[in-house]
Amino acid sequence: MQHLIVGAGPAGVHAAETLRRLDPDAGILLLSGEAEPPYSRMAIPYLLSRHIDEAGTWLRPSPEHFQRHRIDVRHGLVERIDSTHNRIHLNDGSRLDYDRLLLATGASPRQPPVAGVELPGVLPCWTLEQARAIARRLQPDLPVVLMGAGFIACILLEALLRRGARVTIVEREPHMVPRMMNPTAASMLKRWVEAKGARVLTGHAVELIEPNGDGLRVCLDHGEPLEARLVIPAAGVSPNIGFLRDSGIGLDQGIVVDRHLRTNIDNIFAAGDVAQGPDFSSGGFQVQAIQPTAVEHGRIAATNMTRDGALCHAGSLNMNVLDTLGLISTSFGNWRGAPDGEQVELLDEAGWRYLNLQFDGDHLTGASSLGHSDHIGVARGLIQGRVALGEWKTRLLREPTRLMEAWLARSLAAAPSG
Image 1 (cartoon, rainbow, N blue to C red):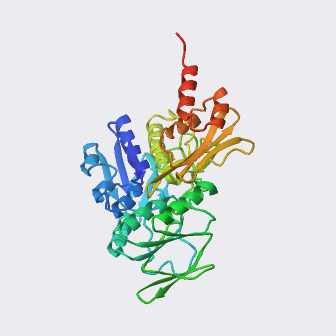
Image 2: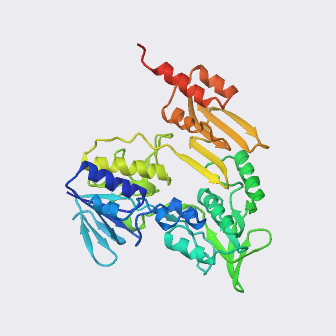
Image 3: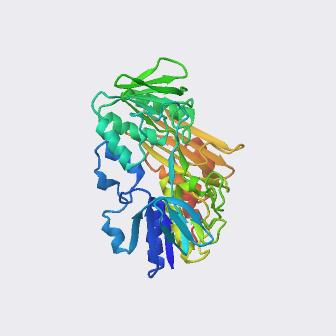
């Protein structure tokens, strides 16, 4: 049996290791689109901040790890898939055959529809190669414009400030991190970031980037233009599905899969940021570009590639944990709330603490927080376990910090007696 995995990120690597464990005699080929050891993109900001070296971004301690597990790692870009003949064609003219194929091609940064994004000095920070280019430019007092104030931008911000850059964040939406924070939490985060030395312009859009002497001028939809020597677009990502347009593989927002992470073609599976997989909170299917989902997808897809239909995916829980210059924020599940659900929030602006719990009937279905780190992971357990809260719902509505007590009480109540 020949297993071919396209994509060497967290989904691909965990899938390869699962395949080796379940199918000791199979051939496993892990195809990477970059001439680097398999690495985590989420580690790149820590490389820029000098917390780690390049080896610290690797998903496994050494390249020899894959050799020891008889996983063949190669580099190449897929041009097209011939599912009739179980073959992929690479852009260098070579071909690779497979019995089972896993597509774990991840996502790429969205290219903002702004004139001038192709200019030198405009660099996304998504690959190791791009991180090296940014690191060469960074120096104390360098004016940098960060386009976007989402999850990735907030991680990058710390690295830029640690390197002494003067950072201005420009976010089109009315508040920061709109995909994991409500306006209350986001306004606190904005004040925190500004107190740490960055400038934050929410509700602004970049309309044009143009040369300006040795640097760049960033023109906004309103307000004074910004002077910069480096512009970093960080406005979200899109699944890498362009090469599949004529493949016959079902596509929507990403690659359409079933609850076994199988595509509409029987021996082709998909996992990670490219897969439109089961969503725990909604019961539907959507793309979740987060690393925990990628790891989970990789394990489940690989299991079903070797044990046909052995695992049915109940759905990934949408969750984010973000450290922005020392302020921890989280969101779990349906943190925006159900249409007819109840909620409770606890706000301590002076102490930089915020907690919001969302309920639907007798269950906790979503949670978000800022500055709360004690027991906040318990919220995930209550949500993902679909724990019936009983009288503890009323108690949490009065005292939302009693999550651990609620978890222990309901766990004991559910335990078999005797």
